[in-house]
Amino acid sequence: MKRPLTLALSCALGCTALAALSPAAAAERPEVTAAAAKLKADVVRWRRDFHQHPELSNREQRTAAKVAEHLRALGLKPRIGIARHGVVAIVEGGKPGPKIALRADMDALPVTEQVDLPFASKATASFRGETVGVMHACGHDAHTGILLGVADALVAMKQDLPGQVMLVFQPAEEGPPADEAGGAPLMLEEGLFKDFKPEAMFGLHVFSTLQAGQIGVRQGPLMAASDRFSIKIKGRQTHGSRPWGGIDPIVAAADVIGSAQTIVSRRSDIAKLPAVVSFGAIKGGIRYNIIPDEVEMIGTIRTFDEGMRQAIFKDLRNVAEHVSAAHGARAESKVPDQDGNPVTYNDPALTARMLPSLKAAAGADKVVEMSLVMGAEDFSYYAKQVPAMFFFVGSTEAGVDPATAPSNHSPQFKLDESSLDLGLRAMLQVTLDYLHGPPAG
Image (tube, rainbow, N blue to C red):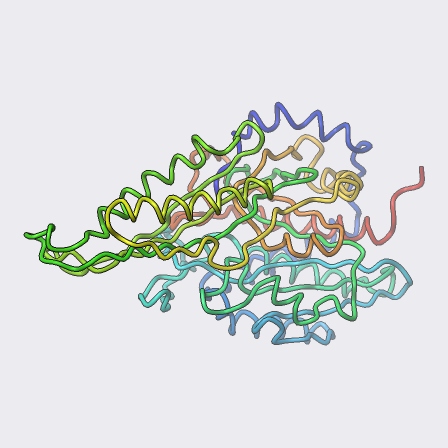
């Protein structure tokens, strides 16, 4: 994820706006306070276990089994195997009321952990044909632990609970392997909402650009649309001492990368909304004195506007084709290489309604308006089906500047575990306030 504007600027621009959206924050519900105190140690323990045993997207067998085991111990009847390793359960309240859904993602990243923790990950796995370290460098271990805690709390109070709550433990939020389907789109395709259509859905994400104790949220567009691309430059192999005897795809690829930077800087109206084109990997050749036949490049495109999104696709294909041709090479581009994530959109009315709940959990002065976030989330697929709200929970410990703290996806990403308590209280407060309905007046 790319960092939003500095927190100071975000607060300066956003706190007043947030205050205007809703009435003053109510006090935290006593049942939330009691549940959080009771479950605090358990949530930490669950999170540490998941952190020590991370699994890549579409490979979350152990995590899913642990989640399902705990839900069964609570007396729930989880549905397993949806979108490969997804787990879904419904808490039935003892009173009539609304239907809502809560989501946590479970997958980890191909990142080798560099944080000195007693429960640090030592796991490895195969990714794109290479052996890599595996780490919960984005905080999904925290999300899973928090939702398990919410499940415990809701089951304990279900006799007095109005309505029903679907608990969605989702695999592959980071994106499935290139030749597989997965994540939120596959959960929906396999009938997540077929028999249970919530009227609202909520999700959270721990975030390094906020201090622990803070919550960030925004009405409307929050996180960017995300699309992957791949470009192969086909040349002709030759000895490194005789470059004129072949066609050098490495030089052509370098020129493509350089020219692609002008798509955003010179062709996209970034005064309207921001956009990003980034190359994440380049692979070609195997020996110092051989110019190879081909080079492969992969990367990501981030946008907030559909027109800009389609224009960037076209421009990148055009750059790849014509710059390669200028070198005598040929480009095979997949831009995008599969369906990407749409913009993550927070329903304005729902967000305004739930702001007092977030303020009750964190304190009114601790809830700030986020600037647009270039990171992406497949929670966006649920938000296209039902009104939804997604919010951030600060994860950077006191004394560390969030602007310079290791970011989500960094091998040095470190979670202040107090964020687990706030995440639990915020999600539970939002859930109960929605189910019990808005206050009179």
